[in-house]
Amino acid sequence: MPSTNGHGPKRAILYARVSTDEQAKSGYSIADQLGTLRIYAAEKGYDVIEECVDDGWSGGDPDRPGLRRVMELAQMGTVEVVVAMKRDRFFRSRLYRLLMDKDLEEHGVQLEAMNDTGNRIGDGVQDDFAEWEREQITERTTAGRREKARQGKIIAGRLPNYGFRFGPDRDSYEVVEEEMAVVRWIISELASGASVNGVCAALDADGVPPPAQGSKWQRTFVRDCAFDDVYAPHTTEELRALGVNPEVLVKLDPKRLYGVWWYNRREAKTVRVPVGDGRYRKRKQIRKKPKGEWILVPVPASGVPREAVVAARERLKGQVKCSSAQMRLWELSGGILRCPDCGRALVAISAWKGYTRKDGTRKRHFHYACGTRRQRGKEACSYSRTPNALKIEDEVWEAVKAVLLDPERLERGLNAYLKAEAEKDGGDPEEEARVLINRLAEVDRKRTAYQDLVADGLMDKRELRARLDALSRQKEAAEEGLRTLEERRRKIRELHLSREKILTRYRDAVPEALEEANGKQRRAVYNTLGVTVWVAKTKDDPIKIVFNALGGEEVCRSDATSTK
Image 1 (tube, rainbow, N blue to C red):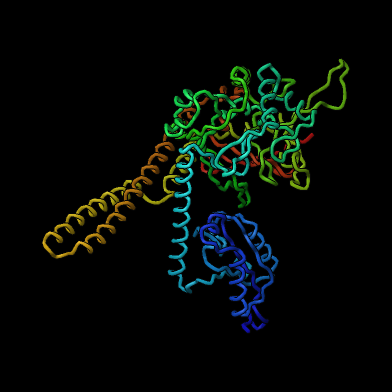
Image 2 (image 1 turned 90 degrees about the vertical axis):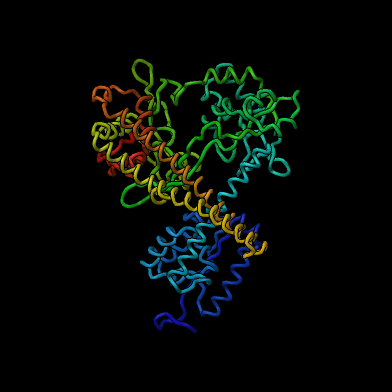
């Protein structure tokens, strides 16, 4: 039996992973992988101490429960080797694989796959192919979903919109009358002048179950009900004007009304945001796509009267996040201020002080609190502090203002970010485009040459077809490469425009104008610079401010935030 440094068999973890799509396609399940791995481990003489599984997780996601467990055992020193059936079970990204190898190497642990070649170049080729295959799967999945939406079908997510349930094939909506009656009541109340806070309080007081797994009705959801087209009534003529697929339109009843479910409105990507001390947190960045790229899917009407929707939208239009008592604008709400423990956004809270003044009035207290802890309790998040809103908003603005008043620093950060984004996907797009255009020209030249060989009797038609098929594949690959490059050019142009917009706005900013900026103007600055604020975990720690539009540049404030 093999031993490790003369101390007995190697202690091993068996690791298996499969995504839902892969399992449906290949049928090679977690149980199949583990069965194969057990036989392999027995042949190698490994002492299996645990089996770690990631069922339904993508190979492009490095933050998986199974991998986290592997790292825990490695840090405890209880394992020496982690075995998977294939290299791509660990990762479909070379970068993540290299980082994992480095982290485990510090603990004397190695990753091993049954299809390892033992050759650095061979293993690298396998990793490159796995990464390329994941990109192709993503592209095909995205294209398939777009086509499905163009056919008038819902793209089922984790949960349907409140008031609906998925149809039998999960590609359509059916109305849930009990929930939809609540939506109709919400929009009716907003249309009649009720406040969002008042609607939430009334629903909670009546014991109406909130959407999903929340314990209370959320202001954001109530407000969004008025603006979500899925609840607004539309005639077929309005659907035509909005750009519904004509093939879908002819199947609709012109005498009925329909709601609109939009697909492809936003693009989300996960980024790693620095929080200091060499640590990072994952955060989703959402980019709203141009309306021309949205895809309209008709759904059953909610039964909300048109006049109620119009009135509710008019009353709520242009409102900002405020307290009902003093119409206070919360500058750091909406995801800017984040919890240092769970990473979730801090929510705005206001409450009366527990005493009454001599004049019979009471003072109102404004602060921020972790949304996770408020919804799920202290077991879900350990961050119990509630930063004073007035103090932390002034503190953050002072730090941001210092950056705005340093034009060289601002331009340096923007240029660094622009360069990093432009080079992130490879080399010079213009040079790559020239190579691909030359490749297309070479394909056309070879096609003509092959046809000449057939005409001269030097090549038969069967060989010609094989050669032309190969050329067609090369042509498709080059054309796809050109399309990808054009998308990269578009993103680079957008980055340049964004850079000029920021520089134009703040290069000539005068201190007096920044000193007089109100809460709404401050929020506009934060959104433009992509500001994320990580609050202090303890009263002695500094808060950390990250400027995402400046390439993740970080500013720390040493003065602690009051929680009184």
